[in-house]
Length: 104
Image 1: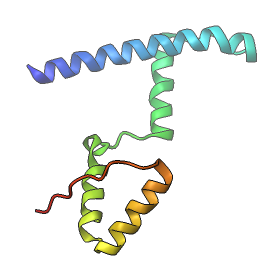
Image 2: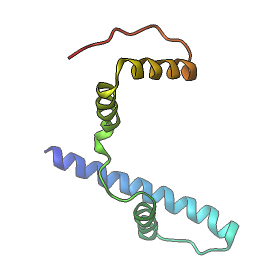
Image 3: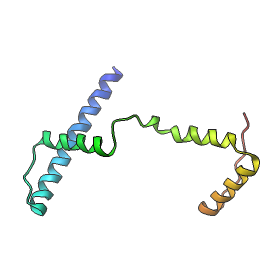
């Protein structure tokens, strides 16, 4: 059932992005550059081509991969390195209430 929902949302997303891309192209490109109007499927093809050229289809790590990596780096830091990091963050982001450290 969950896979069916994901497939439905994926199809809906492709349809929405395809129609938006098609209408933007057909509104802008012929008027600006003198290019021909495109069909829905050509717009979807352009989206896939752009994704392949600029983003690829690789997984993104679940969205929180950066957090795990940062925790691993934090655990490997010495107390002096941690304090230096905190001082640098305070300098960049402004003062913040000290957070209680948790130790595993």
